[in-house]
Amino acid sequence: MINFIFRLLLLLFLFIPAKEIIATQTIVQINNETFKDQNQNISNFVEYKLTNEKNYTPDGFKVNGNTVVNINYTNKYIYLRFNIRNTLDRPVHKELYFNSHTFKLNEVFLKNLESQKLSKFPLKKINANTTLHKSLRIELAPGEQQTIVIKTRSLNKFDTKVLLADTEYIQKEEQTKIISLSIYLGFMCTLLIYNLILGLINRESIYIVYSVFIFFMINTVLSISGFTQSILSLDNHMNYLGTFAIISCNYLYKFTKKLLSINFFERPAIKRLEKASAVISMVLIITILIPFFESYNFIIGPLVDIYILSLVVFIIYISIYTNVKQPTIESKVYLLSWLIMNFGIFAYFATIYGHFTDNEFTQNSILLGNMVESFTLSIALSLKINRLHKENEINFIKNLDQQKYIRLLRVLSHDIANSLFVIVGYSSRYLRRGYVEETRAWPKVYSACMHIKDILDNVKAEQELINNEPQLEYMKVKTLLDNIVTIFTPQCERKKIKIEIPETPEDLQVYSNLPILTHQILGNIISNSIKFTPNSGLIKISCTQVDQTLKLEVYDNGIGITKKKLDQIYKKTDTGISFGTLGEKGSGFGYFIIRSYCELLKIKFTIERKPVGTLVALYIPLNEHK
Image (cartoon, rainbow, N blue to C red):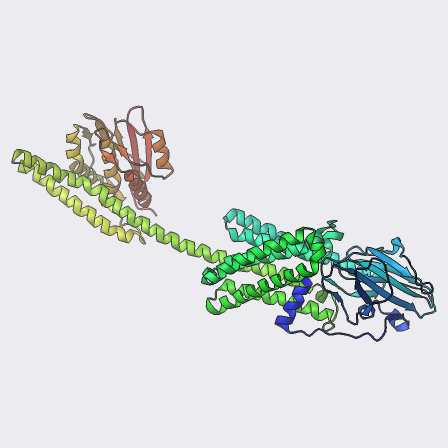
């Protein structure tokens, strides 16, 4: 079946004419010249007959007259007849060898030339010196002529060379073929396992599709070669050849579709064609698997070949179309794989029809072509995945930039509220009382407005942080703490919370960014402490030097943080919405902002649950990192 497909591909794409040799006689003469030939092709001397008769009759035979015995699908009995005469004056021992495994030596007979009756061919001389293919041990006395008759049936195309060869030559050929097929099996299985593992690791379905294609391709090739039947003892494996070939081609199409990923496959006509193809392939597979195929293989077999050939031609067309319309590096490599495979087919059939020298390379050219093709497809797949990974990296960077813009929005919406609270607080007091003590209120309102300006400036500065490092400089710790007192005193007064600030030397400095520390980091920590500390509570800030950092701790005696939220903070997941002691709504953004900016400024951030309340610690660098 597959040989038929390969031949059609060969004729379609490589235009190799099939050379025929017309036999002038039907008796193979063994003389001094032919005796020296270790490997004589006698296919053109073979006589054959297709019939429904179970019993042999001598009439109705045709001379093959070709270098290959090629019989199309048939449900009839196939009779082969060989006439061999020894013209030498010494005994001759040869092997009648068939290089195909698409049939069985069911019944073999010797014809008595005088009585014309058939007798059973000695069983011990059938396949006595071969493992992979079929052979008959021929022993001729001087001047003796033997007529051998083979009765057989084949579900698939009957396609073989018939050779009259020396035993040593046949054994060497068999051993070479077994080694070649074993190498093929090992290479393809390695490729299959490698891609299967990659598919499971990367969770990319294209690897799995390619692995399935390789699996059924292996079964197809080894079934045709006879390896699975003779070496692996899978006697009925050949019966499923059509199934293996159909599934292999269908998964090759799926692989092509996933690899090339072009708009061509989105066309309505192509989608309808895919549905029709799926139905046809299912019907063909079912008919092959049921006994119906044995009676009607002469109809189903050609339909399977036409279906597979059409699918292969369509895949090649897609490959060429892609390289013309939307070329990519993987599409070019994919097309190269088809050229390699077709070269292997070219060499194989050119050898069969006598155009190339018969040697180990040309005999195994299809195997080599299939191995190189599969390896080339793996390269194309790797290039595809590599390109997708690069695209994913670009998308990841774009998403990261988007997240940074979202963070800007969170900062703006979350932290500007603190300064606005100061302004709103004094404004509402003015509205209630009709006056506000200027010496106390207006400086704080002014300061709050300046903090809003700082926040807006910082938001603008965030644009630069997307691609650049933040602006770091030496800053006074006292300035930082004074800013915190100014911003959060109104909120603390509202809940009668006492905020304790340590006495800080004027010359104590850290190497950081004052606006970010004030608003995004420490401001969010204090804001959370106020929310979750009850009325008349305590917030205490302390500063100590630890190695080359300033350890700034914020302790509150509030309701504390739950273990679940603590785990969420360390796992870098959103803590969700929560409510303070007076019903203040927390958006869950605070710790996200704190964590993000601490990483940006290389500040170590820790948070602990205490028996009463929560302790947050910041380890701020005292000096510039070198």
